[in-house]
Image (tube, rainbow, N blue to C red; front, side, top):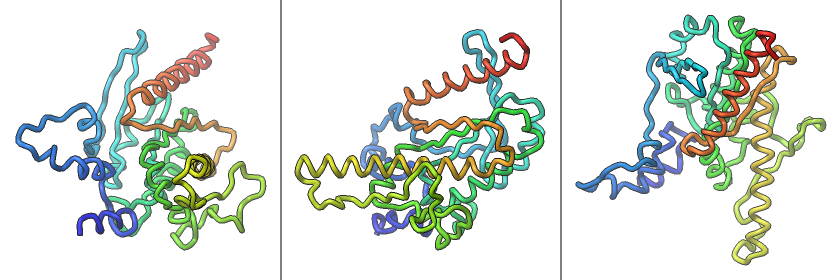
Length: 264
């Protein structure tokens, strides 16, 4: 019964993204001598409440970061913190294209995320602020695609989406993506090496086009088309991936500040 209910996640109800991981480790977690390892700690989901301020000294450069809760009830607490920020990092979960919103399970999670991003990136406080988009949870996104869950479950009029459609018949011919859904074992021959290779290639093509389409949907809500949007595909539980991304981000912020100061 639990497994059958779990298959309906995203279609009928909200479920924490780490549930899969801990369901698979249930016997280990419930053992009397259980001690969490680094992966367990990284996979724990804790809601951000209010605004948490952190200061970091990285290579003699001081960074002040505000972590603001993304839930609807938390958003009204944000704006008075954002009077003079150099960059806004907006974290969007890629796998939420097939997830329900925590506060309202009738709403698609990515629909809500794109609407919130539109509000923030077009806010007058951020006219001169760098906008950085983290398309996070890439690992879970790949899992959902590999199960055959199409972007039509989010970006189609049948899913309540009135923007650009994930539909071959209505695709913009100038767009740099193809509407390409992955169907598991579509070739019918994935058990042999050649079939497995073909299946893998089809998946990677579908994945690349899907990420491109989602990135396009976030970019299209910017009212100032001349303003750049810096996009990174991330997996927050992958320390190497996150370290590289934050290194790129900090270099970008420092470079922009030097430009504003006329130093370079």
